[in-house]
Image (tube, helix red, strand yellow):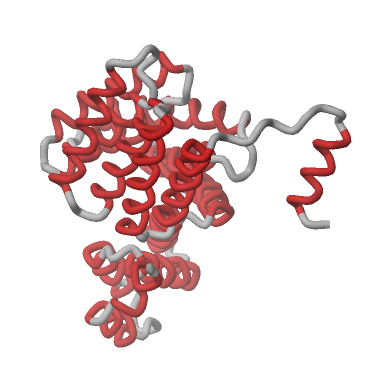
Length: 310
């Protein structure tokens, strides 16, 4: 029996009425935002932005303020991911102003998180840190998990050479992410936050000189990201495992992970990351056929996710 049919029959069997259909503009707003999320996940940021804009227009016609804010924030995220920093700043500023004027300040933690990512892209690390701390507080105030923002803040401390702060925040992020994921279903975004926190925990384990623990964390993260088919997470996890197995002299295993990491980086149009992985492959010796990787790095277009976009 198809899943949809099973769900409908189950609802009818409970004896309760089905929920009333949304009015047309509200239904279109929800549909457009859902379609935008789909294309965003596939790395098609222009297409995602188009649907997020349609969602904003429909949300305004239905005067659904929460969805207007979500649509503006989503457009900011799509512009940021696509490299349109000025455009991202404009959308996020609109979303922030509107959210702060509403009771409960809906979406505030997500908007602040995106503003922090924008600040980091602009090289303003101190501002990014302040914004991620504000996002942690906003998430706590809204009763949602702060794990994503704690993880981002932890990485900021790691990059700045503050290992004690990094370790403390990495532990906090993992604890918060586990709690949130335990309450969610298998396809919920909370699992992506948990996968990221697990990868971070692997890096923390390496700092604590615990390679066995690091490998376990990295493999847990990979399993979750594979389940969600989350390309950035898969690239992050396979590269981490390849690098770790190289240091442990498990070279055949390392080749397999780094090979996958290389092509995942190309899929994300991350040529700098792919070059970094290629440098790791070069360390593995003559058993690796470097010519194929070098040719792919020179012509990455066939491997890029955005080549499959409309």
